[in-house]
Length: 290
Image 1 (tube, rainbow, N blue to C red):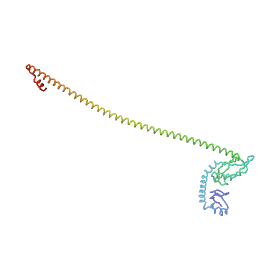
Image 2: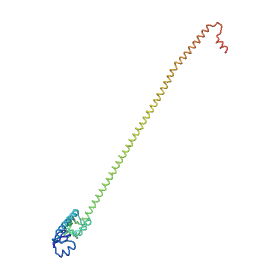
Image 3: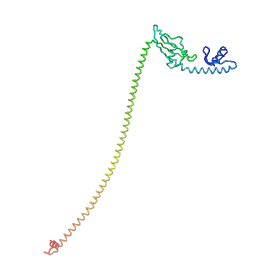
Image 4: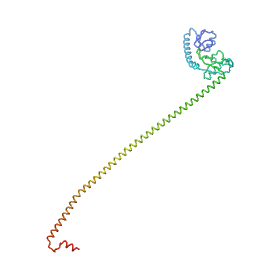
């Protein structure tokens, strides 16, 4: 009988494959286990649709394993073994050893998929195929080294790692120092900027103060000028008043002198009109007062 496989069946075929098996094997095992469907003339069309769907699913699964294949192709495993003459190792490197090595790296691979024909029994480098999906395979690198050499190599690696770590620490310290220097310079620049701003503000205040002082000084000077003007005006007024009084005093003095001259003239005339021996009435009056 003809059947279409719904799952991979060892030594028979892969999912989606059309195969011919015995009726007993098909009806009593494959079909009840849902590993296959019987192909008949009545369900041929339906079987073809099912087959295409299964093939599409297979292709999707294959594509999903491509990433795993790429990662496995980059894997390199190293095993340390004691060895004698002609690089023959004591013991071997088996599929189980390789499986455990892959597990340590995070790969879950069945031991049967490690396609190692026989255990490795010599020092050296090997390419080991790993079955991933149907015919799709990856290939990992396996190196078997002498245990003593491995120790030396390990010591060398540790030394290199230590040196690399020290270099990174020095670089880190240098970067931190550089960063601190940059921050310090930046801080100084900011501080300098603040000082400049303060200085500018102080200058502005000084200018404003000077302007105010100038204005106040100008006002004081104007006030003093006004006072001087007023003083000068007062002095001029006094001078004018003094000048006005002087002619009046002169007139008064002239009047006094005229009056005195008149009196003297009168006296002279009176003296001329008196008889000899007759005293002047004024002189008599003065004598009687005495």
